[in-house]
Amino acid sequence: LSTQVSSTVFFQLPRRRVALYRPYLSLDLHNFARASKPNKHKKHLIVILGVRMNPRILSTLLVVTSLSLLPQTSPLAMPLHPHLPTPPALTSVTPGTWAHDTMSRRVEADILARLEAENSEELNTPPFKEAKEKISALRSELRSSSRIRHIVGDPSFDLDLRDWGKIMKGVVDEGHTYLSAPWLTAEFYVYRRVVEAFDYFNPSSPTYRFDPFLKQKLAGLEVREAVRCLVVLDEATCVCLFSVT
Picture 1 (cartoon, rainbow, N blue to C red):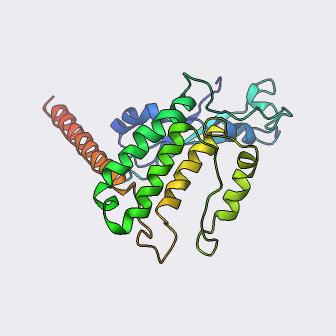
Picture 2 (picture 1 turned 90 degrees about the vertical axis):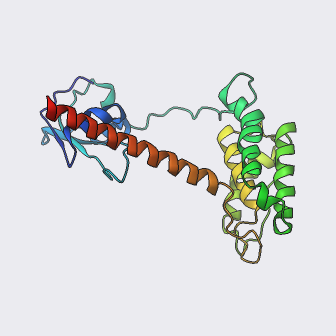
């Protein structure tokens, strides 16, 4: 990007953290292109860059950069929505691809298997009997790449049934399997089937609002806290070394 940076301002950010998080800075080219429409009255553009950071240390980092207007020959100055045909949906039928591995193995053998293992105590109790059977059936469908069916539920509390019906209509009507259906749709559908298995939205169900991924989420937060402590310790060490020097 051949532009002339005139100023950069970091808000509430120690100098060392700029270097620490610099690899995470990313320019949103889509919004930049939309902002770079010809305007003879403008001399500069303001581009906001985002960074992923620990919210306990800093909730948001804003890098405000003043850039010269791009010339009209720049690719970023081209029309934002060119008249091109929509490419075909990515499916999971090709062995060796990430999509194929995800829908033929990873979702069933890694994600759902871990879900069953982490919730085995609950799934082996009478209130969770039906949920256990439905998760087992879902895993069996994935192993054999069965044809996909519609989401089942009660529209009085499963408020997304109509939306899922529209999303899955073409997939179901055309008899698609977990591999032949659009990959993104199929994987999202699997997670909605997990919600269905636990009757998550049914207030009268013994598994109402039970989150089978809760233990994974809590484990992730524990790791994140450990990493935060290491970063703080590293900073403290650097400050001490700097003071001694």
